[in-house]
Image: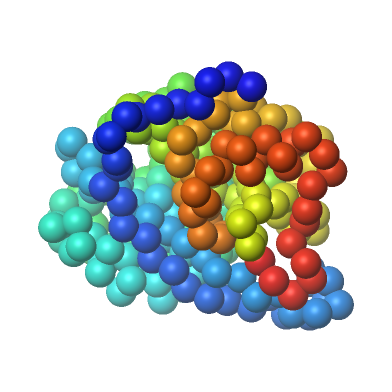
Length: 228
């Protein structure tokens, strides 16, 4: 593993929105799967970046996150979707309607299948969105992307992994398009050694690089049935 990325004392100005949802029994297993769904508003030099828009009716929470950064939807310049699953794009139309100056981005393989109020700009490995670098992290979906803020070592991982009770875990297999490519993406992220990982499902961990290394080093946990 490479040395962890380190932003020193710098810390990215981030506000999260958390909603709870339940996947009905029979889809991810015999029991209902309760999930927290996180999306983020991030202060950036040219305006606020929103990363994912959560489930339907999340726009009020996103508005509160934007206000906590000292802005309004008129200050939002970029909406980045890590992938096309409904719990990540559910409030896209509502948020985009309130943020008329914001461009919308998604991974090139996912973008054509996302309904949006205006054109989505396809992104790929190496695309820069303000101070973020786009990482192609396919597997969960073909076009899944993560965002890395190198100055602070902060990674927005989307659904490339989740956290559960202090561990980094793989997502439910039923929602993973290509398990082999998903594992390659995890290994790549582990080698990156992020100082901070912000998950779409699960709380931030104190030492994410170490937790991710433990996962990569063995078969590792999937979330227990009924929880993520």
